[in-house]
Image (cartoon, rainbow, N blue to C red; front, side):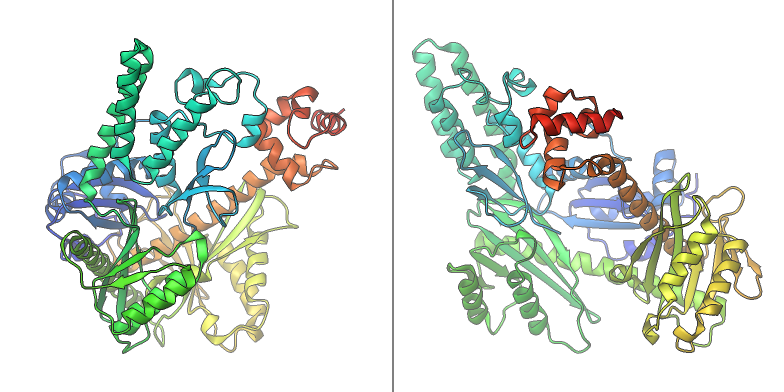
Length: 617
């Protein structure tokens, strides 16, 4: 069977630059959602197999048709690739992977300074008293670690509000995932404190010390004929040894450090950072700073380091050591600056040996791989844009395109989106959403009129006026857009965007869209494999995705909070306490007056008022 040509992904350009090394790949659809995660001993051979002229698997053909982007992470060994693949599948839950259902800021794991400490995820300023471990590259990585720790250490992870109001242990106690400190007599203060300390040592990377301590406890319990207790320690030891074996592939780097790899070609820079804490690679990210023409590599790297670590954004912490794959003339100066900011000594170095040199090489390989994928995408974007310019016969180049879309559910909570593409592709910093008010529910014409008036109803800077403006809709929507823009000519600085309507057609299938040109209203039907059409589809799909996510968020917020917001005496803190303590709005509605009064901060009188408001009394 031949693969469908309807995918907008340029596989030939991508495969030219993919590494032959082992690693993990993530496939994305046009909405930016991870649809498949896989690992390979040879990335180039494995990925090339998806794009052969004949593919027998129906699943593979369906998958390939939806691919809009592929990202890869190179690893030391195939074993590392397998572990990373597992972690990414747990994080993203891709719909084309086989899933075993268990379950931009930098989150931390915190062990609170409580009488019975809890282990949990923490974001933002670290004002809460306790011990912090991290930062982790994503919330998914934290949740996976917490899930693992729950299996090994029976330390509570519930919120303090839940812990303080329990009269009997929860299900986690029955599953032996929590020692039940919320109920007196279930666990001694000494035993609980010991488990908390073991968890603290584990998060600090001292796995062998934890295992040694548990072995001593097991032998002591066994010698005193407390065999059930000895068996519990044995199970903990086995689980910890399994985790230690898996983590050993990350090497023996015991410091807290970031490893920075740099790639710089054709005026584009990629800086890939590996986050290593307590001897474990917590994850990595690629960054693409905007680089002016003719900038030296030294300046690119130095500017990135200072902005990255000194901004103080997202809970990011300066590590005690930063390793670079390029030597900088001012390494000592940068280290002194970071040390002064951090309040402790920070080393910045590029000349390393042994294990550190191995990680620097890995960061550099990933930076180069990410950059080549980026450049291949830009090359594809340039070819598509050139064909679109030729097709539309414009007087000059297309520097800016915008697309508008309307989203609602049966007329409820209408949201309009505006997405922007420049010559490099999506320009997300310029994306905008508009909450549409004061129209008849479901009137898309009125919604389009409102959003265009709000977008162009004031004086525009010349570079903010699009060369091409796409309307996701048919002739009626296009005509309404033409009327609105005709009234806004004074604000457009003499520049008039070319309007194009994108009608989905009767079957609403990708590749069968009809383009309706502004003014002439001529209809164009482009071949499904035409790169210019792929660019238009990308813009339209991005606009649709952005509108849908905005509408869903607005609808969810309204359904979750509106009824509570209208009750006198229930402010944001009490509303949050109600939802968190009782487990959501539906549970709040089901709760009795006594149940409501048990929520911290809710008096009996207020509980009665809430109950009456929710039940219409």
